[in-house]
Image (tube, rainbow, N blue to C red):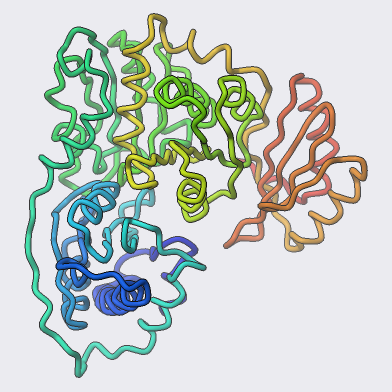
Length: 465
């Protein structure tokens, strides 16, 4: 049963089967054991090193799963700090603010309302995924009997950290927004998720922000549209509101508000890689020579822009475990993925929708042009977008693709990257499905079309989105 709920980066499945309160208890016990072992191995000590921060999203099943999770943690003799119904990045903040041994958020992020799950973090909000401890938690969970006997003795404490969270995030807003000398109108689609709680509490009283709220009601745990902002159809309400309200910008958050997507004043979605390139300009003005981490699927415009401004761009594998590690290893100021995850050194190298929102607002406050005019110079290339192909022999297909382009420069950081003078592409293998994911870019739209026609037959059956 546990093999059905443990994924590459977190624990996630439909509720109540296969994910339920019994599994939540086991995840709590096993996570407590793992986090205790980890702090002992690192020789860490402190008054809160036997405390785990816990929180939950707005799903109907979240409160009961959270209680079972806490019961499991307490059975291992570890204490919990319950911070309530919060966005996932709030947990990362709380772990560091309180100097705890880790944290767990009950959430299923952008999945439908009948899903739920657990995102586990260790000391300093470092991620726990496959290869960094999640398989250890699964092994412990598989061997534990909820009926005991167990050490017990863990205690629960509730704590309201919204004021501290708000104060931390306000550091990253332009002074002109905080004092109201610069005003921006922003339409925000909370996707009936945790941004509906976070935005009013953190940004609701900022004098320079006129917020047009969309889908802020998260009281039912249901969604008007899928809470996944990288699916363009989910941006329809936001784009309409931006036009109707003459907003300067539109922002759509996912279910647990660790991701966001931006549309300009005309309702045009901005690719997350291009947004990173734009945000890097403000960051490099504040910290000349800074380093940035970018998803290897990103447009070549990203490293080119960073390099042209005197910064350093470092390519990373896709996935928050790799991105966070790369930020730490390179002391990078910021990173971004095509999925809408943006990572910040000043948010503990973690992803944060709220911090990304603050960066976008500050960038606009510093500018004297509409967002489209700021973004257009970065749109140098034509991108295919991510195209999926069904293939039962993924490795064989990658080998055939590499053989078909013997003159290409190749890289195997994550799947296969090919680069020739007129185009480049990356093909990655899905971790969970018989799928290959293609991203291709060129300066000429005709080249994109031509190269897609050449490459597609080598990758299998194209999946129609």
